[in-house]
Length: 466
Ligand SMILES: *Cc1c(COP(=O)(O)O)cnc(C)c1O
Image (cartoon, rainbow, N blue to C red; front, side, top):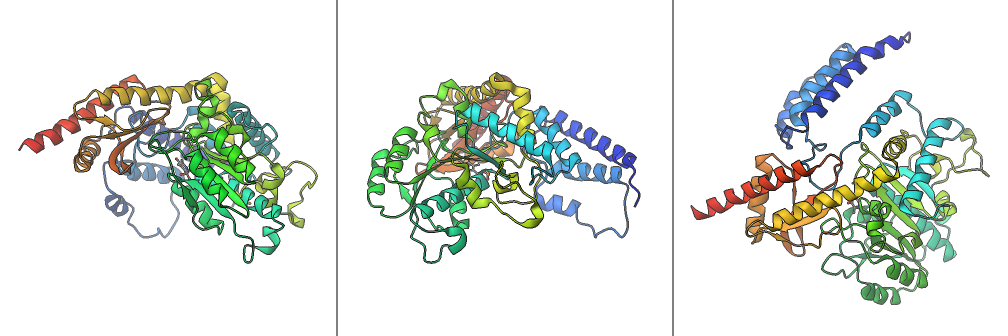
């Protein structure tokens, strides 16, 4: 087939139009999808077409059919799970990444994206005050960033015990003990499963979900062989940060590798507001975070940081004749994450940071926390509402009396559609969990969202009287 650059024009222009329509609808549209998945499946339920279609028409059809099934995650009134929206520069850079179509694995083959990602990695280390000589890998998300850090740690602690996991595997290896706080994120459990390390030993946490140093010390005292300790910067329900300095020192004294899951919370390290809360963070061995959460770049973008570049390269480095690599020089991007072929997902990170600058990034993170505080204060003022956590970052967990009542308010709120907040369970209670992760959330969104919760609460109260 003959290549005609012109063929890209109409579908790309249609994509821009459809994207602008979608983005333009975010400030006013309901957050929840208009239709459930069965209706969407029905809309897409047609046999594979026999022949080709016009690309621009394909884009139009796609956007039209998908629209009623899209969740407005980019809305300033979306507070579900921990997600985040998309900054304009990051979204646009992401489109360029697709247009460039670079397979970002090798420095010599795709030098531009390698250089951009390396610069983005340096900026992240600078911004988050992590050791400047660390290696940075761009993975698909927080789960895989945790996997990357823990894989480097697994190799290192086994090597220290005289075992080469790369050549000899895990069968017959010294047992690796993994210690994690009682409120460890499920993605860490998945990463440990992928690594053949099984379930961690859970260490008691305090009322905010922070690992207790006294309990960690006790658990470490019982460990004899290789050990990984997983700490958390940013608890899903409270936003709390584990006591870094103390826990890392205890773990290092016991010869353990310390990995920090900071999927959304690691970004707090960018602001002086959390310097005390994160004191000692930089002494860990590896860190995982998501750019698609707090930094507001498009999916998928997790970031793994490993203080010892050799430990990371040992876990993922692959040498083979047809890659043509520079052994002595910098690691290739594919030596830092599990994927060989991949999109240059670090490029939108560069664009996000380039557009925000240091002050803009700090303002972004602080703004999310300010809005969480404002939501918590306004909700706490409503009758019968309890804010269960100390609001130290972007997360707020709320109860409305009994578990049953909390669930009914959550249901009514999601049904209303003005906002999206997730139902969850924490500290033995049903909660409505609010995560402020979107850069566009403003005071008006906060006010409208508080009104929506008040409405849902009034509806449940009225039904109780009937
Ligand atoms: C979201 C999250 C993860 C997992 O990240 P993904 O990008 O969804 O894979 C891990 N840990 C914490 C604390 C999270 O909030």
